[in-house]
Length: 255
Image (tube, rainbow, N blue to C red; front, side):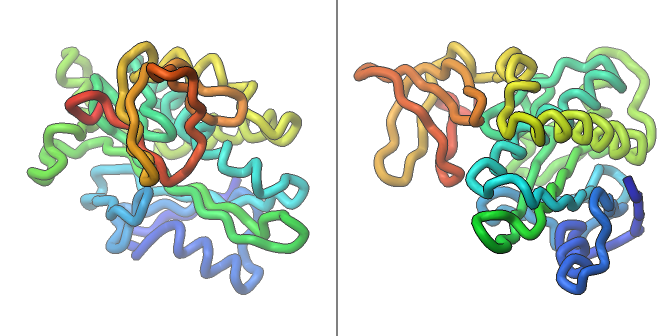
């Protein structure tokens, strides 16, 4: 892997896209920044990254032999990589909220944005995985203060030492991701991380509300399968949630 660091950048995802558009970006290049001025999250949301207080990092790769229909499975795999890094570095117990939010103590600590640029014959020209992790942040905007946390805040809660440098978190995430990605290339599914993910699925066994734009409904979250789809048991039977435009909420709250 090639690591590059900027004190400030508009977006680590956008920096890799600029390089890839002119053919100057080797596979597994990682770009990180002390702060982003234009960070983005899922569904067009912004992602705040105060200076030197969080991980803002992106990696590019070229899965030319993988059909694009299978590439969204990389999103929950990235969540597993983040959870793995946090648990191995700090001993904190991570949770995952479908499909890719990583939580500590029931609050969001990580956001992930994957972007696929289409090529020819149903293959992607390249994929960029963007990850933001709250590391040293202690104060959040009022609108997210109730659902967000940081590694430092959770370490303080259990009386442990504060987190190390953001660079340590960054490298641990990508080392874990690279291991899982090699397995994904062999199977093109989530079998290598499935048990890890489901053991940490925060809504598992709980009643949730599926915010489907066509028609919201409720049910009990069961698990994800090898494709990354969420299985939900409703009053009328089991349903499978696999749309990237669908969100899941706990009854009465974020989880």
